[in-house]
Image 1 (cartoon, protein in one colour):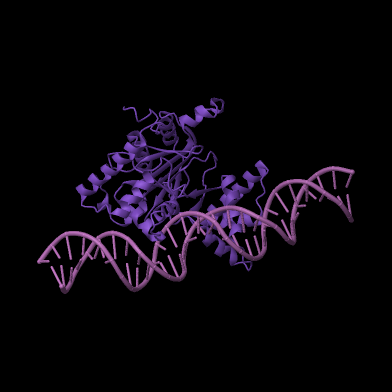
Image 2 (cartoon, chains in turn purple, red, cyan, green; image 1 turned 180 degrees about the vertical axis):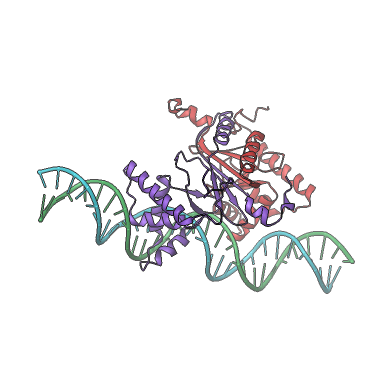
Length: 171
Length: 171
DNA sequence: GACAGAATGTTATAACATAACAGTCTGTCT
DNA sequence: AGACAGACTGTTATGTTATAACATTCTGTC
């Protein structure tokens, strides 16, 4: 566990975010090269924008950021890039927020569980094999064959809990 | 386990759906009475429309069905009814589909897990305490305090698996 | 029957997403 | 190089989902 990560999977506010983004982009490039996928300028730029924060990015905000560079692309440009990145498993869509976050894990099995802080809006991705296993078991107990799981857990991250008073910790 | 339910939590095609709907509405009425909530005509009607099938209902489809009765309400009418029903925990919203299903369980703890068949579109709700527990554990291992969970599992229900060939069953 | 608060009606618009078709780029084959 | 196919992007228009804001009506209470 290196210093850029807390034990909580949430990014520390003082982490080296530039390095964090570079790593993500380099990782994405390697991944695409290895799989014969074309990480074009637009796609790369969209991924970069999404990586900018650990908060989820909304499609039209991404669009607006793309527009800053002189060109003013239309919605399909963004949605197509998002579709590519989703298919390449480089990002996740958060259905409950209509927003997108970068996939931070090197293993791209992609049945992630997302912890969404309702206070600071940060998202942490956990790939808990036990959760997956229990979900699979639960589903197959009902004769159901799982294709994909969407697990979005809303609540408060450790940082916000500490900042806003631990007295609210009912459970 | 009575004859109107399969072991799979998915409704059998030959179940007594009229009774199924009546039961849901009566249950909802009792619940509202007990909690001082007003299940008005519109709200009741929206719930009835949602109960009509075990498939998820979309807001604008509900709107259209409401319109069949001569009146032609605007979107806010439906969304307000949906909000009420969600708050009262009588329905669930399926984020990955932008759709709504009736909550079929008498216990209204409401951290349900939903099995969504991508073939027949039916939805089954399971309230698996083990899944909840594991999610809670997984989250708190990261210092995260859970408020609400959204678990949507997409795949194929037992009926569709049987109908469309068991040869696809990889796992 | 006047009042307060809840519920609904109404109009307009915001927010999210895609269809359809035209044009451009990239690599490959000859 | 030139022609071609397929992938990618641009552009216009529109579809889908949801809410803000304000007017009106309903319901129960004093």
